[in-house]
Structures are given as C-alpha cells and as structure tokens.
Amino acid sequence: MPDNQNNKREANNQIESMGEGLLTLGQTIRSFIEFIGESTAASWECLCHPKKIRKRDLLISLNSCGADGFPITLLICLAMGVILGYQGALQMHKFGADRFLPMVVGCTIVRELGPMMVAIVATGRCGSAFAAEIATMKLSEELDALKTMGIRPVRYIFVPKLFAMLLMLPLLTVAGDMVGMFGGYMIGNLECGLTADVYLRLTREGVRIGYFFEGIIKSFVYAVLITQVGCWCGMQTGKDAIAVGRSTTSAVVFGILAVIISDSVMAKIIADLSQL
Amino acid sequence: MKTNTVQPPEVSPIVVKDLTVGYGERIILQNLNFEIKKGQIVTLLGGSGCGKSTLLKHIIGLYPPMQGEILIQGRSIVTANETEKREIMSCFGVAYQGGALFRALSVAENIALPMEEMGHFTKDEIKERVEQKLALMHLEGFGNFMPSDLSGGMIKRVAFARALALDPALLFFDEPSAGLDPLTSDMLDDVILEIREKTGATIVMVTHELPSIFKVSDRVLMLSRDEKSIVDDGSPQWLRDHSEIPFVRAFLSRNKNN
Image (cartoon, rainbow over all chains, first blue to last red; front, side, top):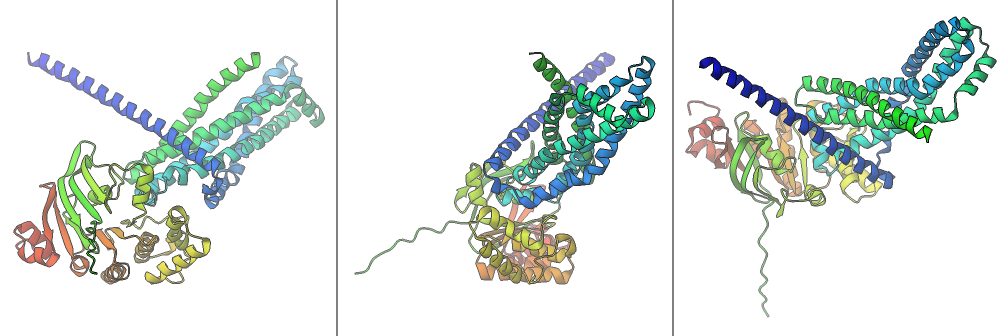
C-alpha cells in the first residue's frame, strides 16, 4: 500500500512539474510575442517621426555593430572562403572540374554562408552585448527610471540598435561575401592554377545577381531577429549578476538558433519562389 | 458688496486606498490606507524586506497593485492608460537608490533627458534649466562629466537634479543616503530640505538612516513584514517616544530594549 501511495505521489509530482514547465514555456512565448508587438510599434513610430530616434545612441550602435565588428567578420569570412575553396578544389580536381570552383564557392558564399556567418558573428558580438547592456540597465534601475520619465524603454533602447543593425548587417554581408570569394580565389589560384581574370569571369558566369540580393534580404531578416532576441533576453533578466550572464548566453544561443531556423525557412521560400 | 467665494478642497498629492501589493501571488503588503498632504516629507520605514521599495514602486506606477487604488494629484495611476500614465508621471520625479544615471550620457544630458522627452522646452531653455538644477545641487561645472567620473554622493545629487528637472510637485527618493559617509548623507539631507523650501514639493522617501529621518521627516509610516501592513504613523520623534508598539520605539531609538 505505501508503495502504491508513493508511486501515485511521484506521478502527481511529475504531472505537476510538467504543467509548471508548460506554463513557464507559455509565459515565455507570450512575453516574446508581446515584445515583438511593442518593438514593432516603437520602430514604426520612430520611422514616422525620425526626430524621436536619439541620434547619438544610433551612432554609438552603428559603431559597435558595424565598424567594431568589421575586422573579425572579414577574417571569419576569408577563412570560410579558404576552407570552402580548399574542400571544393580537392573534390573537383579529381573529376577535372576545376573551372566549376568559382561558381561553387561564389554561390555558396553569396547565397548561404556569407550572410549566415556574418549573422552568427553579429549574434556573438552584438546580440550578447545588447542583452548584457539591457540586463545591466535593468539591474541598476535605469529601465525603471526611463518608465517614470514617460519614455518607453523599447523605444529608447531597442530602436537605435535595430536601425543600426539593419544598416550595418547588410553592409557587413556585402564585405563578407567579397572577402569570402577572395578566399576561394586564393585557393583556386594556388591549387587549380586559375588566374584572377579567369576566376572572375567564371564567378560572373556562375553567380547570378539575384543570388546576391537573396543574401542581402536574408541579412535584413537576421538583423531584426538578432536585435529582437538580444534585447528581449536582456529585458527578461533576473535581479542578480548571474542572471546577466544567463541572459547573455541565452541571447547568443537563441540568436544563433533563430538565424539557422529562419535560414532554413527562407531557403525553402526562395527556392519555391524561384520556380514560379 | 461682500462675496463669498468657496475654495475647492485641496487635493492630497497622494491617496492610497485599500492597497494590496506583491509579486505574483505573494502578498507583500495589504489593505494599506493613507493620505499624504501637500508639502510633507514622509518616510516609509521598516525592517529589511518589509516592502518599502515595493510600495514606492507601486505608488509611482512601475507595477500594478493586486488590489486597491492609488491617486496621484487626484488621478488614478492604477487605471490610467499609457497616455494618462505619462501625464501623471510628469507630475513627479524619482531618484533611485543607485542613482540610475544613464552611463552613455553626461551629467547635463542625464538632467536634460526628462525635459527633452516630456516637456516642451527649447534647447536654450533646457540648457538654462540644467544649469539651474546643477547649481541647486551644488554641482556647477560638472555638466560635462560622465557618471563614471563621479563619486557616490555626486551621483545621488545628479539623480536628485534629474528628478527635479520638470519642477515636479511630488518627489520620490529611494534610499537617498544609502552607502554614503555621514557628512555626505547630512549634506543630502540639507539638499532635501532646501528642495522643499524652494519648491514646496511633497517628498516621499525610503530610508533606513535614522539621523536623516529625524532631520528631514515630518511623518513616518512604519511598515511591518509580519503584519504586512502599516503598523504606526506619526512624526519620528513622537513615534520614538510615545508609540504603543515596542518594535517601533526600539527601531527608532536603535535600542532593542526600548
């Protein structure tokens, strides 16, 4: 009998904790949806009344999202181009298909890897920085101070970051694409003997301008996602220093997840649209 | 001919009715009823964790109460929509415990922020008013400093200046003297009295500093964690000497045997 009672209690506990978990998940999803709504309204308000954007904050965000991240982004994209070129060259050389290397490297970088690598670097740099900054502001009651001044924290904090990301991420993607293809050329030249003229001509033949815009459109979507996730994680932080660290980690993890999932969705949508 | 003009009764800056506050389902304070008269300096006092700051944050509209009503200058901050809340909030200034200054902004920009966002001032007017507030807080010449360059006492004074930016009729100070040396703390008390004298503002503060309470407070609302309510109300001297509750007398005389 006592065993039966214990089993029953354990089952009840498990059901209870599952219920609590589902409730927490529901609340988290709800708060994220609320944040999306609030941030969209604030962004629209600032688009209609650009004077409401604090220019200084925008410049600071432009600098931290763009200029500061330029070297590391380019370095990673160059390395990506080199890796891709090397692996491609190894396989293609076996079949005498060296002349397809520029097309493979170009298409892969411009359509997928370039925007995605830039977005992942931006998530690590900017998404985490947004979360840490906002979480610290929350701890030091700066968000409360904004509210009592009649300023919506979302407008003050989120909007400059979003606009900065929307401007800088596509620019970084363009630069990343160029450098990535240059990495591919280095390998094409060293391993396959392709000259600069030939490599450029083959790239032009294989990489359509539409592919390039495909990557740029993706970078706009990534910019919105990274900013949303980073700022939301910061706003959700608890009231101690550990919570700040946790928010920062969440911003990076969920940011990368959002980038990869959205890339899969966009890849399917773009593929379907291109068949029309 | 003699005319009889009937003066409308003066609205109390803060009226709290049947207020219950808490977080989630946890009640911190319940069934609070009090009114604060114009020009009073009132201290919310009580042991650690009794809900002083929680009550303050509910009064200024940062959190919705579980139950009850809070009227600021006769208008409910509980039922107000976003626009109304913004209007009500323009009636008061808040200085937070750690100052809550924006680190990316200079001292002058911090003080100017409420004016830029809430008021309808020209750039010259804002500049002039910032200078006035800095002078009131004895911070002349510090306008271009960044918050990271200031001492704790100076940060508090900048926070006071920012709270005063819109010349509010109502001021809230959360632990104004916390973490300060006795002399700086005493100087801040003088600043609080000076603010009241010059602006006639009603001031509500949360503090544990007994010398500050006796120096500046007209009235103390004593909160109790066990009772989850206000257990006594009166001037600090009267409560220390005549309160019927031993805990209140002991707290204010800093003597557990009292």
